[in-house]
Length: 195
Image (cartoon, rainbow, N blue to C red; front, side, top):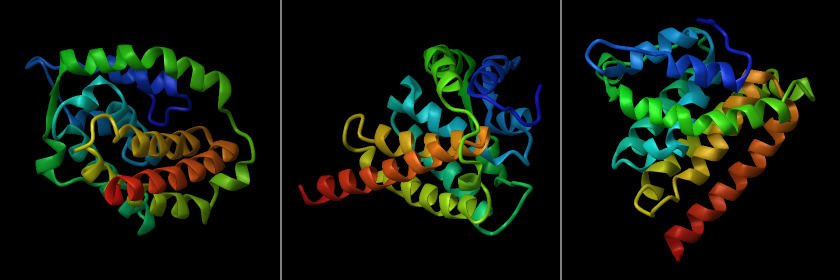
């Protein structure tokens, strides 16, 4: 499998190919699939899963947000090789649920690949990738309280997915759109807390 996927279809296809004799797919397998040096997919994959039917399972959005936050912190620290604690890396999801999630993401993946590609590449280089990591970290923190509101966690996950996709396909226009989604997510969070 590709160490550094260059489009969303390849990411979703690689996720769909993950198999296990136990019928459970561990997070460690997902990281091995994309390579520990490929931080775009490591942000994009959990965000896409959080936006899929898998994200409606209680506590799954918060767990995915924790994984995203750990990756974002390591980007902020300038690390190029990512590490997750063993108790997180060993967490698993049933192969059946993962297949349902990847099937649901197939159509949107093709659409994203047609629309998003390397524009305004300057907006995906340093220091923008660290700025994006800081925004991703803030969005992942928002997921936890928004999980209590039905389907509200999709909003920060959409912003996180946009950042992850922008990093994966090196699309600066998408990076700027992700920043706009970040602002919208903060607005929704403020309304949810004060409303």
